[in-house]
Structure formats: structure tokens, C-alpha cells
Length: 393
Image (cartoon, rainbow, N blue to C red):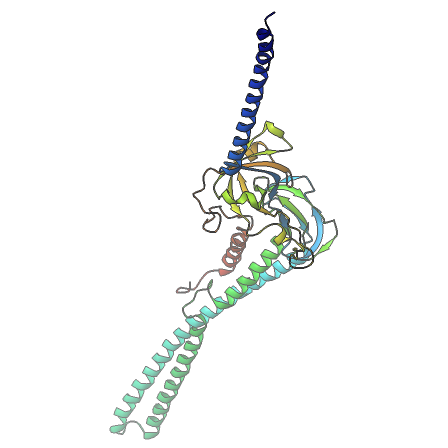
């Protein structure tokens, strides 16, 4: 066998191994380049598992104190806004309401008398003016007759005294008329100060009896009930809480190293552990907290004392969910969430220049209390007006 042929075989067998090593080296190099590119290039997404569901916990508190005689809702019950939840004993409030209604009726009748007196005083002034004119005419006639001796001087003096008395009586009547008119001038029965004071007392009494029924300020799920039958509670005592299911959002706690590209208005995708990947929520960042979680903790860290170890801080970011998705797949307070924020859009401000456009939280449950009280006031006034004197409103 040719020795040259025997030597070429090992060289030929090593060629594939060399190509394999070169290919592996190229793959490793490409992987390193890709890793470095990901490290130093701008990331377009930030994710965190440190996110939880938060929402409003509306405390139900009475505006007045009382003894509990009825409880109409318990934990896990779903209630509507305005629904009665707790009833207090209202006996004292009903007595006060009757007393205030009687006082208003009495005030209306007294003011009617004042208007009548004012009208009567005006008529008295007219009568006294007529008497004065008659006395003055009689004095003139007697003075004319006295010149001829038909009337004695004593009769003339009596006639003159009569004129003075009539003039004084007219003055008294005019002053009395002014006094009577001062009580009702530029007012009506409904706007008279005495009646308005009685109206205020009746409104207060009506509101007191209306507030013996504690109503739900918002609709939602009842939780943390801590009131019992027969319990004497004071105004402001927390009776129970209501969680509105539509008023929930996500607080995602991103690391401080992730906050560089996070902006208000950026879109987010979320998954709840309770639903898994079967449900994908769509949300949008609506705000960032003013500090890290540790800065607002009960015992903030004192980094200037003792040995210091750097701990990566987290900033709460508030994410609003789409109402339709929240209604279709309700959440509970405190549930864990997986959050991914698309950080591609970075044109908006981080937080300081952002003006919130969220609508205010509002309840209309207590809006009709004064309206119903005014209706009762009008009924009491109408029942005691009677037949009004002409010219009296």
C-alpha cells in the first residue's frame, strides 16, 4: 500500500471535527452578541409578578347615634345603592318631629295674626285721620260762629282741644301701624323669620328620623360587618363595609430599575392567578405613586444609621382595567396579578405633568333628604294658612 495514501486518511478524518468546532464557536458567538444586544438595547416591555388587586372599601357609618333594632345585610350579601342596611330605634325622633311640626304650625298662625294686625293698624290710621279732619272742620265752623257771638269762647276752646286730641290719636295710630308693619314688612308668611326658624327645626327633626335608617352609600358586596342587634352605637361608628366590584384597579410594584421607561398612558396586559392564562385583561397606566413602598411604610427605613445594605426599591404603579372586562370577569381585593407593560410609547410625562381625567367617586343616596323634608314643610304651611286676608301673601 502506498504510504502517502495511509498518511492522508487521518487528515481527512479530522476535517469534519474541525468544521463542527468552528460551527459551535459561531453559535456561541452569535448567542453572546444577541445577549449583549438585549442587554444594551432599549427594552420594549417591563413585567412584574408583584401586583395585586386594590379597590375602594366604603365604610358604612351612621350620621346619628341610636340603638340597633334591625340589620338587613350581612357579609357576602350584594346590596344596591340606597338599600336599607341598619335601622335604629326612632321613637325619640318621631316625638321630636311631631313637636317641630306643631311649632311650625303655631308660627304660621302667629305670623298670620301679625299680618292681620298690620292691616288693622292701617285701617285704624285711616279712621283716626277722618276723626282729625272732622274735628278740624268743627273747630273752623265754631270759630266762624264765634265771631258773631253765636258760640261761646268755651265751646271754641273745647273744639280746639278736640282737634289736638284727634291729632295725637292719629300720631299714636301711625306709630302703631309702623310697629305692626315692621314685623311683616318686605316678607311673606313663608319667608317670615319666625316661620323660617320653625322650618329649620322641622327640617332638622325630619332629617334626624330619616337618618335612623342607615342606607348603603354605594352598591357592592358587604364585608366586615361588626354591628349587632340591640347595640348602642354612636355617630361615625363603622357598622360594615361595602366593596364596589366595578371600582377596582391594579397596583403593580415595579423595581426602580424598571421605572425609566414606564409612562402614564402606556398599555398593559394582565393575568390573574384566579383565572390563569384563560383570561387576559387589558389595562392602562393612570398614575405612579409619589414614593416607594418603603417610604410610606409604618416604620420607614433609617438608611443613615448602622450597617447599610442596598435593597432594590419598588414603586407602586396604578393600572386601570377596562370596565367591560372587569364586569365579565370580576376580581376580589388582594388577588395576585401578572403584569406586562408595553414601554414603546415614551412621549408622555412620567407623572408630574399628568392631569388625572378620572371621574370623581359620587353617591346620590343622600340627595333627596332635603327634598322630602321640604315637601313636609310645604304641607304643614298649607294646612295652617287658612283664608288669607286680602293683601297678605
